[in-house]
Picture 1: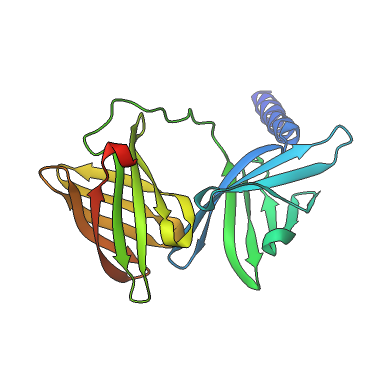
Picture 2: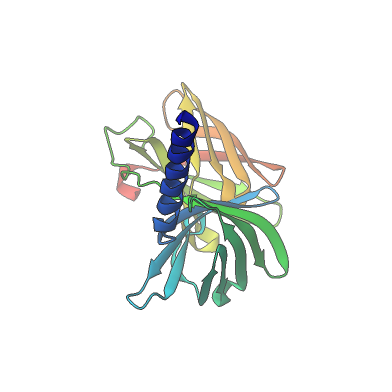
Length: 234
């Protein structure tokens, strides 16, 4: 009798799991990181469903400041998911797991392929400015790349999530390039830009007038002196 009850409860549990899985939907926001060599790009895939049951999607490329990029074709057949983005000559083929919590697949662009896994994007409250740190503001320097000097401006802002930043590359007309991580310990200061396989390590001068350091990109070290811009020029 007990064996029958145990089997019954096990069957009911399995049915409940199956019902939960079938009720799950692919709609929503999915996040993933595309890695190609030393480069990393954070992506967010937004999937919606029309009243007629047709799926559509857009993509955000966070580290390239590209938002709402159109997905031209999107198909979901069973657990097989595929989409194409003609504007960037890219496509994706993946498989949704039974719990509908992850999509594992391959991104192909310009003939090159790389693994790309999406997971459900967790809502995160936006960072908000807090009391400025002593290095908040704008810092300008010149990178001697060997080919041509590049003027850069680093914008530092203290937020509820810690220090954040963006970079303008003035001579390339590239503004607002996102800094992936930024931190300091005393006078030691560093940041990463994973989308460019780049990082910076430096020392903040005692008078807070400059940060002396080294900018590293794709294994190449370049000295970079960032001087603080007066408030009137920010």
